[in-house]
Length: 97
Image (cartoon, rainbow, N blue to C red; front, side, top):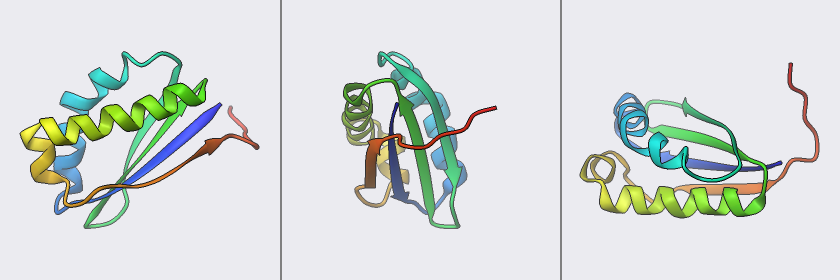
C-alpha cells in the first residue's frame, strides 16, 4: 500500500471539507486502487488529507488530480491558501481492525 498526505493552509477547514466532499471525492473515487481517503481538520488554519492506494501510481495520480482540482475549481481555489505540503511513501507498518 502507498499513502500520500497533503497538508493545506486554509482560512476555513469546514469549507475545505465541504468543497472536498462535493467536488474532489467524486474525482478521487475514479482513480484505480483507492483503498481509503480521510480529510482531517488539523487546526483553525489547516486541512490535511490522507489517501491510501494499492499502488504508487494511484497515490501519484491523486496528487495530480488534487492539484488540478484546486487550480480549476473556484471554490477550492478560494479556500486553499497555498500549495500543499506533500508527504508520500510506501506503507511499512500497518494494523487495521
